[in-house]
Image 1 (spheres, each protein chain N blue to C red):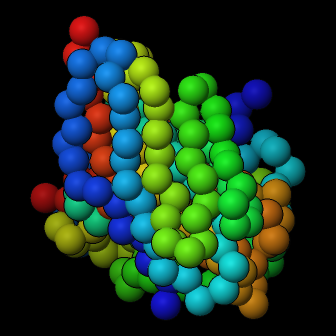
Image 2: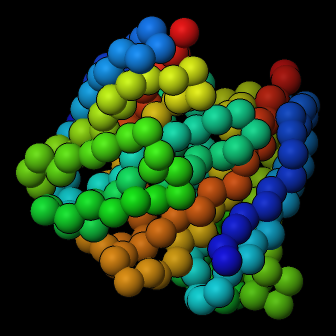
Length: 114
Length: 113
């Protein structure tokens, strides 16, 4: 079946530090991969996505590359800011007979301190 | 520019009470979804509606019912609330059944005592 595993948090970093949040997946087909971000008290927002192997998604300084050989989609940012403090969810979308089914990881809480 | 709107934002219920969570989207999307979010478990799919007039069970449908009232609205009903249904509920929509980008509402925090 399909599943997403991401590193457990919480993660605490100093401002301008390098961020990596690991994500690996299991899928039966050819999924699309996503990172969503959830700020306190808000819903999930799409941060970036990649729809096929070797694609790189990027947005707001965050990047993730779809690695089929290692079934991974790790999130990286070179220099985090306090405003990046949020919960990050890795997700995949796989086609089923009635549409797309989404599978989410458990979320990684990031706190960036000044 | 509202996107996906959920009501209410917060609710406290007593065990055995019923309630309906409302969700509406203004993006002319065909597919809509209900998820619950629990600590350490990510989001789990309760029900979804691939298109107007159809609904299907997700991963955790027990204790819930849904209604796709029209293209815009997709409601989630708890007939007899239980403490195990204490959670944050998110509604989401996608353009169509093949679209891979989901748009989420702000969530409903439900506590069952």
